[in-house]
Length: 190
Image (tube, rainbow, N blue to C red):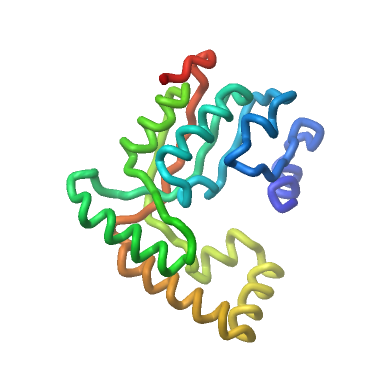
């Protein structure tokens, strides 16, 4: 709903946009009769294992020529597997879900294996749960609602505080990644 509103505010014809919430594990089946010029994935894959990410992206590659991806990434290389596993465990505990981001090379490889070629990528620091960022991303009305929920619900407040602690303690190792990738004519690697 918010994405559609923003697109309209930016002058994009709403008839050109279809916003769908999908069960990512069944994306290939859910999109079976559809084909899109561009698919946007926003913070939906980082809690899946690499194997699941690969399967999801392969399913999507059959239905979308271009992919715009905004996910969490490790801002370091794969050399310290022990440290990466520690971060995954700490963040999984704080978020109460699986947490499996990839390095930049990891995201590039998974996309390549699914049949996409990365054309552009950008990384930067995570600004999740930063009050200024929440206000910018959500707008005043939704930011006020979020603040109210945090202030009035102890369980939400506890989870937000723990998540913020975990993110802050790993701020040098975690960040965002933006990727623009195009399908290689359905040529996924096996």
